[in-house]
Image (cartoon, rainbow, N blue to C red; front, side, top):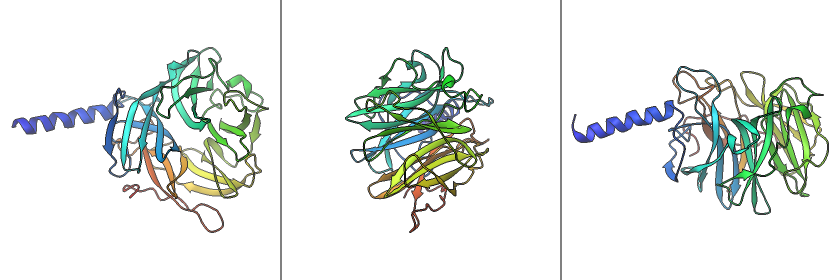
Length: 326
């Protein structure tokens, strides 16, 4: 084995080890070119959310770190990537960890970032330290890549706030936030039961009661987006999960169920989506288990494919591809 071959061999082993262990925490900017789906191949990235700001796409995802031979969720921090074209990406230093919330035990589950008045608010799912169950916190930053800090010093949503609807400890997960045309912000979230509540303009306090949303076969992962006069509420349905969606003329419903949007991945029991418009085209962001040879329910990877609408405003079923965005 000559020196060059030896270096390449060792680099290859290092790359395999990185993916197997969930990757290393990013300490500086790292730029790479996506070669099809998944877009990140050197670490596991789950529960993606995306935001467009100043002609860039910002991708936020949890870092799956479940070691080989184990089958459980192990997610301690979130990652952030940015791209001007959906091909060349930069991973930025880790902007937020679950334990950055002093009141939380850990577990960096699904999240979403949204901008308002020059501030960036990151709504996250974590395990509460003293109130049993999952909870939703809010972090804030002056930049979409952070660093982010706890905006409240306490949880925005805790499990004991929704016990009249369910008696499980994991129904307060998967937050998504949408700011309507009139400036009113709404928080949607839930597992088994979907909820929404209005947010105050400061984006860190509720501005009204928690309302239950009725959706057929709702499991988790709500995401709100708008196109024209239609509001779209997509969500993970049943288990293993596919993505379904509903439409409404109003942000608070009533919602009309429209069917399946994205089929079961086949190599991941969970599914989690974000829908964004970028430079005139629409995109569907999701995860699967494609870079783990044994499937990836606990070692997932983020993918992006195009999303298309029908003339009546309904969405065409997503075609999951290996090639990704061309």
